[in-house]
Image (cartoon, rainbow, N blue to C red; front, top):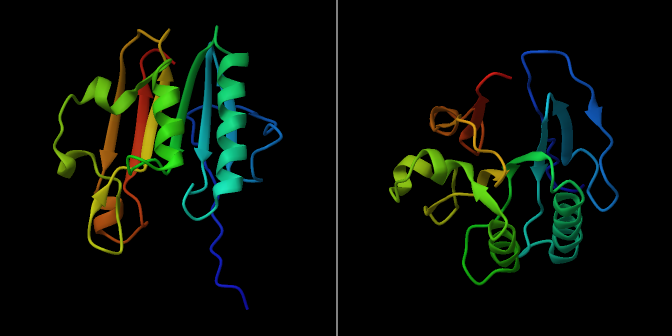
Amino acid sequence: MSSKVFSYVVAFSKHKHLSEKSPEGCLAYKWNEIIINEYRIIGVHIPSSIHEPERANDYWNTLHKHYFEHSEEKIIYLGDINAYDEGTEGKKQFNKLMKVAQDGWCKTHPSDNISDSFTIRLENGDFKRVDYIVSSNNISEDFIVESYQDFYKEYLSDHSLIAITIQDV
């Protein structure tokens, strides 16, 4: 019997929207894409580059390709990006994306305080940030990014919840 845990990427919206088809190269249920007005919002769950390097590499290649195919649009990726340790392939791929995109949390919460921004606690007790909201640089409108540690602290999930509110959408 396998002890593998399956996860799903879920997106919630105040209005009815159809999800776009996941691109090839992404794992089933790990990419949820919706278009709301001029925003392309993608919920992601990128595999760990340490535990699943080949699958993570395929996913990152797909994400980078997707970003550049839609570079004129307002893009927001949010979810478990699994990029938390410098020197890992996941962090390198994340840093590559950050050269052309922006970190929504850092944009709206310019603090280095890990207690404000952690989204997961590892087995060794370290707090890390694996969940992100990343947006294209052409989004200059105000948006609010929030993290709810209560989801983690109350054992509702092994991650803290991150949420984005986009003004006038």
